[in-house]
Image 1 (cartoon, helix red, strand yellow):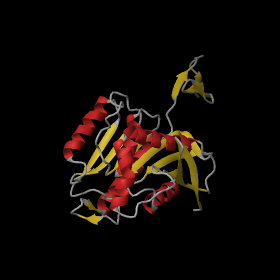
Image 2 (cartoon, one colour):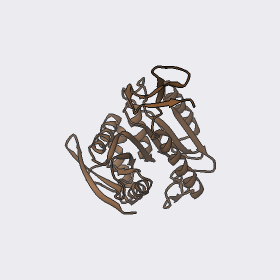
Image 3 (cartoon, one colour):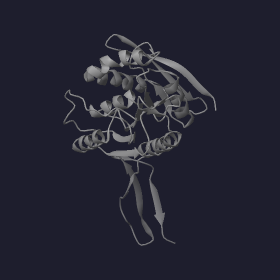
Image 4 (cartoon, one colour):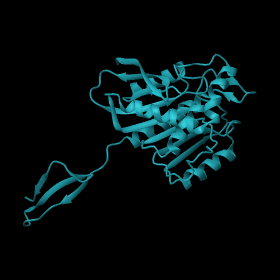
Length: 277
């Protein structure tokens, strides 16, 4: 399966951003796109690998950049320094990820009516904030994301995207109490949401390099597999071709029953007739 990998440059308020894009070159035509938002470490190999895996599933994998110039932190201190301005200014965070959504829509391989966003840790917070803005996309998926709500004016906005939250019950960075608060928030916003809470699972469960119980991050391969399958099922559901309705236009006699005019979003599709023998 030949994957084409390339960078996509885009800009947010003068800040140059650099996404990593992967697409299956054996397919033709437009296809759904999945934005991947990185952890606090930046747009590193972890999210680039997720883009490749999503491309292998038939999507455009778009690993976006929240920091600029594809910056990657070398340690926890650098990661925190890179993340801090966006955590402190959620309006900036929301504008930055909205710029990525606009950028992916410009790609010639993307079906702009079929776009989702997934995120890990800090990236989970980012995709939830994207949904909180009322952005028009099909769905968002948060993997062990941070769950605290923004203090800006997104409260009260209707969430249009379907939401899937995949979370470890033992995650010290987003507690069960915060999970309940998020569920209440999503319900009040009219969201179509799901939350799966995995037992015996801490923060960072998708990251094979996470091995610091004192910090609260531990890789959990079983939960990683289950959560990825849950995401795949979710994407298949939200990108499924819409059903059309069948309208009987007229009837003639008992032998010639009528003409079917399939309708979708007010448009006529190819007409069918049927007869009794």
